[in-house]
Length: 198
Image (cartoon, rainbow, N blue to C red; front, top):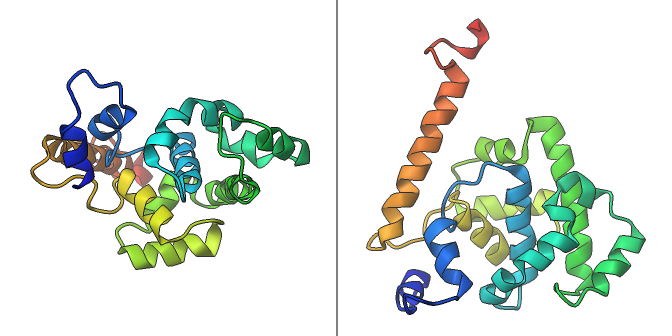
């Protein structure tokens, strides 16, 4: 059973967090860098655990990691690491905690070079999973093939989030088409003129 089938088989009145995530977030574009970072944090922490657990702990993760504010997490010190290791609301794994902090610092460098984490992703899109994994491993920590693949699939940079029979599939395509149109307008200007002429 794939993810779409699992969610569609949930009862209509379910409180399973996978329902909302599947219908409104999975495979949809994410433009905010802190939101992208938050998704990466969850994917890293999911390793060896269930995604349902990550969704249930999402608010706790967001609180523990300063609202997923990249700059704030990048400034975390040893005291913060100890605080996180003592936080029962999140995954208390030193390797994962250190990776999150290190990755926040990496994203700050990418933002300085590319303007945003999203821009860095866009510059390298599209590419296949193997190339993405190689790219991520050159910059980030705790990013194996499964983590990178799910992060990119969940944010729409890799295909496969929804099967084509899933009602949400067309919604993700429409969302990406709308995003592409918006990006095009930014690049050429809302009046159709190249940005350099404004």
